[in-house]
Image 1 (cartoon, rainbow, N blue to C red):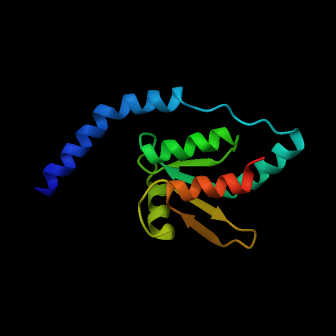
Image 2 (cartoon, rainbow, N blue to C red):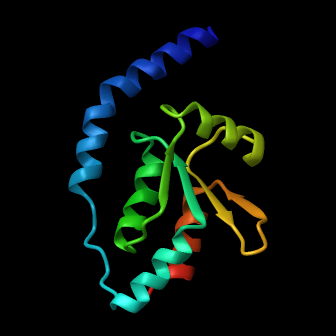
Length: 129
């Protein structure tokens, strides 16, 4: 029974994938504008962030829309296509669940944030104008 359920959701995901990608492309918000100095500072801070995601995850789409709105050049790691990213997410983050934001602090310690609303709130607090 479990395998039938898995196959059903895999098929459903494959059918809905093109529509989700079109939605993600068409619904991108307008990015905020910063002065060059402020954007350079944001770019530097974003080097410490990596979003583990896959393109058709609805929760990942929500987070990526917020990243686009805030004009953040965050590194994206696709866990479905990149086995290294998937392994890192599992071993260091503790679970294979997306979206996940990896935050590297100045002292080198890592924080792994898994909930899309929590990620959005963190990005808004840290980078909103």
